[in-house]
Amino acid sequence: MLDVAVLGGGLIGCAVARRLARDGARVAVFERGRIGGEASGAAAGMLGVQAEADDPLMLRLGLASRARYADWLAAVREESGLAVDWWRAGTVAVSFTAADELALAERRAWQAAAGAPSEALEAAQLRALEPALSRRARSGALFPLDARVDNVALTRAVAAATAAAGGALREGEEVRAVLVERGQVAGVSTARERVACGAVVNALGAWAARVRGMTPLPVQPVRGQMAVVQAARPALRHALVTPRGYALARRDGRILLGSTRETVGFEKRCTTGGLGGILTAGLELVPSLGGLPLVDSWSGLRPGSADGRPIISRDPAVRGYVVATGHYRSGVLLAPLTAELVAGMLRGGSNEWEAPLSLTRFADGATARALTL
Image (cartoon, rainbow, N blue to C red; front, side, top):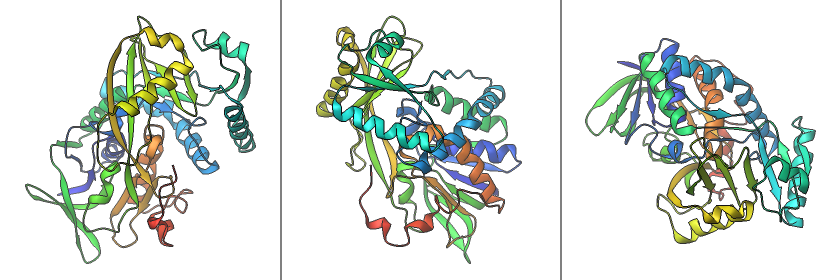
């Protein structure tokens, strides 16, 4: 019998399983495909504490998780024996229009009031930081609290650390339902068997709402398309962002361009319109990208909740059932904090994030509202 069944083998699921296994729990990760094969592998790896936070709560969440990142990443490297690249240079937001400048000024103002200052940059300062940047850039800002990580390598390393701690990784095994007896989790049902367990963590991302037997989850997939061009060497030091897209470089010279935000159900494919918009945004930032070969493209399904915030919560109707989904664009950033919160919930503890991230916040009918993205 398992102590905990973790549903979903993305970064969130693996981070939770690693933490539980290191705490001594008998834990298994159930993944319908392959570990890291969905949103965790399709992301760009931006730790967008400031560039991607849309409200003070998400900013505070990002700050709390980023404060844990260095130690967490060092521990994962040691446990797994796998290297994971990460960059701490910050994100540069770039304004090309008056509307861009106004939106950036508003973001900087509320973040500074919340204790996360940024540095205003004039056009000349922007080009000093990033010589390849378009000369059409009017102004910008450096978000120094942001970072980025190789998300594919990270997910692989966290999975390896889970296995090293005694956790089982069950790929190609989809959980169809959570089994409940007298209001308590009793096990999970897969296509092949029933597996007894005392607790379940639903970390299925965009698929979290499909598990039968639990309180309905207000989560739906949000498609994000990505394009990749290849340079001979890293062409950018920072991640560059505008309201229309972003560009960031890997050590091997690849430049990742993204991303769309499309509510099209579980349709995971790239489209000419989507990639066209991404490439246009990339060329706006760095015109010289137009001379580079397009070497890859993909799409992923991010889990968006009804209010745009994660759901990290006990299910009020079932003992032993915890939900960790709805992270949308912040799954990579929030992985260490999410694992910590889930482990605490399974031990019966409480935390400062319990109320704002609880499933019960949707009890007033918020599940029927459209996503706020």
